[in-house]
Length: 159
Image (cartoon, rainbow, N blue to C red; front, side):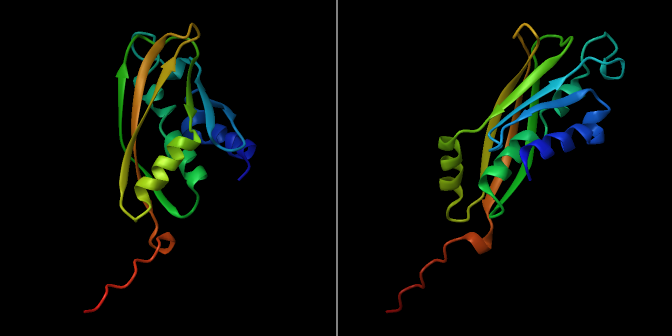
């Protein structure tokens, strides 16, 4: 799927459309994504700052999706765990960026080459318009090479 179509589809996805979450950039190779959360009356908490669930939601699918698009159909890729640390109250428009590089993709391929499962923690910050960190998010992604893509093991030698 072209990155531009993917971006538009994500922006029309109801959990994002109705919470003020907007995907502003997806690179053609799916290695860079930028997401904004705009302050709206329906995503404010009781004290007038960004609702924590919306802050987490704006980051939720992107590590899994960027890895999935870069590794291809030969891999199982699932979100396994997540955590968010709130650093300061979020107001106005906040952003999060996701970056994958070839070295990390090589690490993921090597860790799963034999068909073993591999759990990798990704981390990124949500920042406000001044560049100050509002929250720090960690996501654990499960990866495993699908059985059909694994190199067959040589038969055991017989004595």
